[in-house]
Length: 144
Image (cartoon, rainbow, N blue to C red; front, side, top):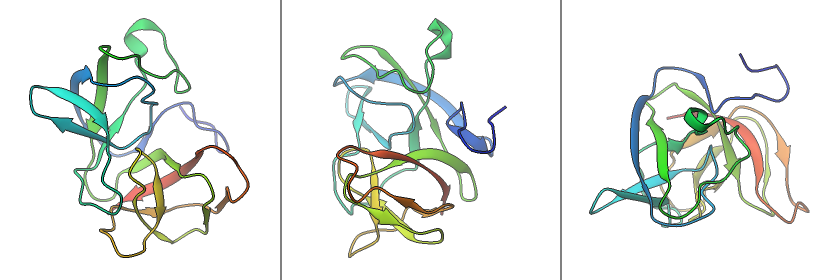
C-alpha cells in the first residue's frame, strides 16, 4: 500500500490493464507516460501536447525493482493502460509549477506539463512546484 505522502507504487487507484513491451530506449522510469511503437517496442511518449493512450510504465517488481529504478534499453518494460478516473503517481516536467486541479498534457518526454494548446490527458491531484527543480518531479494525477 502507498503511504499518504510518498507512494511506493505507480497505480494508486483503479485497475489498469497490464501489458509489456521491449523498452526501445534507456531511462524510462516507472510513472512515465509511454507509447507503444510498431514492432512491439515502447518509448517515453514523445509528442509534446499530443494525444496519448494513458499508458504508464510500472516498476518491474518481477526482478525486485522499485519505482525509482529506470528501465535499460531492451529490458522487458511492464506498463499499465489506465481508464478515466484511475489515479497514477506520474511525473511533471522540469520548470513546471502545477496546482491541484490543473489539466495536464504530455511534455514530450514521458512527463506532463500544464495544458497549453495540446490534448488534456490527466488532472493534477496535488500542488507541486518544480519551477527550480532541474529534473522531473513526481506528482499524483488522475487520468481523464
